[in-house]
Image (cartoon, rainbow, N blue to C red; front, side):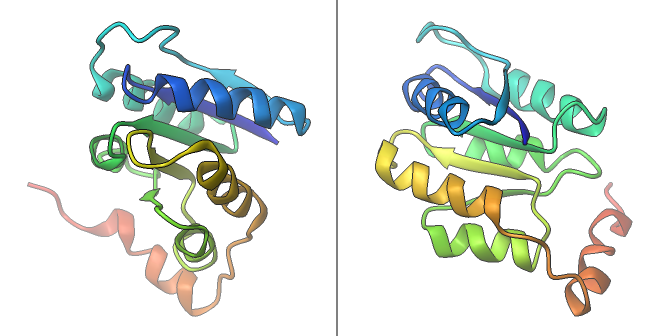
Length: 146
């Protein structure tokens, strides 16, 4: 699977570990950075990742900041992006099955590699169930934003 990853400076260490792990599993990775712990704005990296997905350059994305909250908020500003902050594998399962999430947000400050890897594995393996969930997800992009 082609996966795009990005982080901010706080999420950089976990992103780097995830990139290595996902590549070793055979995934094709597009790493948008950053490439150090030098301070950056998470919004810039979330926006770049969302654009790559919307252009069709990746099937799914993973964003990492300190808490995961800022990245998920920034990503969900894009029509067609459904970012889910997942703290546990079960959350990733339902984010995919019921919400058709295409971006996983993780908090590098509160999620170690082992847990993050479990969450990412579930997120990448689960399929959207469709059916009654499709009727609901179709409404995501219809909401008026002022």
